[in-house]
Length: 93
Image (cartoon, rainbow, N blue to C red):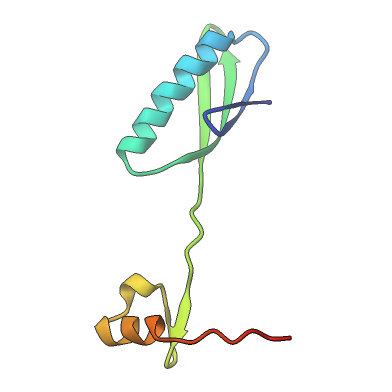
């Protein structure tokens, strides 16, 4: 396994480093155009063709509960967003 631009890559032995970098860069640009990020790519040889399998990086979203409503902050109305901003954090000992 190697890492190219933060993406974990596994590749068959017959695939050169230049082929790996070119393929990863092309795939990364396609995913970025759709607003997605790649976590891992697997490259396999099928005869003289390279077969690519990519897995998306899943972003972690923060979910809050305001007066019984569970959602991400962007989905709350203005009043619920203000309530979230005005919260006071109390540290436990």
